Image (tube, rainbow, N blue to C red; front, top):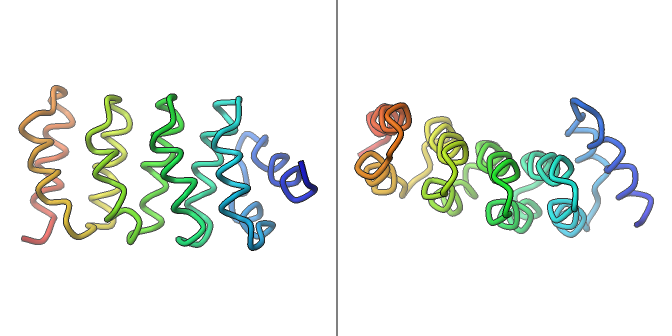
Length: 151
């Protein structure tokens, strides 16, 4: 592990990490470092790395966010879905996967992301969510989000 990765890991180990400080330490290999951290054996570090991906440039964030959205642990997927709010262009591409996730928390944060950034092309996914969502609160949230999306 190189010195930059160790410094970032130390920041992420804090209860409330300073994501902007960690992002500032990342150089041209930000995507690789954050991707490696998303695949950490520690779910806590993986989830915090997914959150960190929201604080780096979109070009560097795509790979780690894709990894995080496909992570086996829903805690990591929730962090990734929430981080998409900080990257509206990536949200347009990646939020559909989170909207159809098996975990209710991931779907909730995906809907919150859609509500916050209103990415183009997600209207049909939100409409589908209303039809198939098993949780009444999420069905209601999806209906609310749909009214806020451009037609």
